[in-house]
Image (cartoon, rainbow, N blue to C red; front, side, top):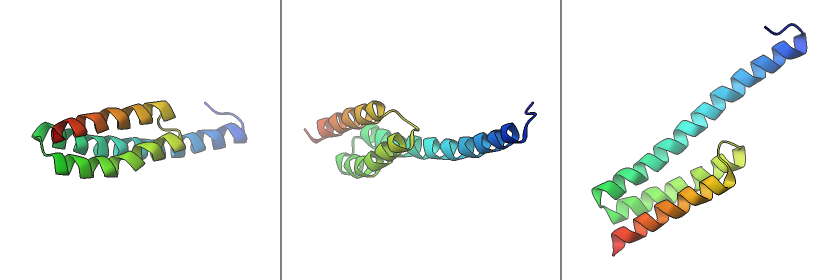
Length: 88
């Protein structure tokens, strides 16, 4: 248990940051799931639009420290290649 005032404040800050990070992580997962569902359905146009919406969300999450930058880039790259494969 936190004993000093600064430790108590740190605990409050951690709780607040955790809530924000959880929300952001959930939002990213939702956007990625929409792309995955469109790919599974085989609808190139919907998948393409969903990817265009998901890409900035992934990069924003990386910028905010929710994801590592390389993880975000890798996810975008892999989703992009799967969406392009639908077009053929």
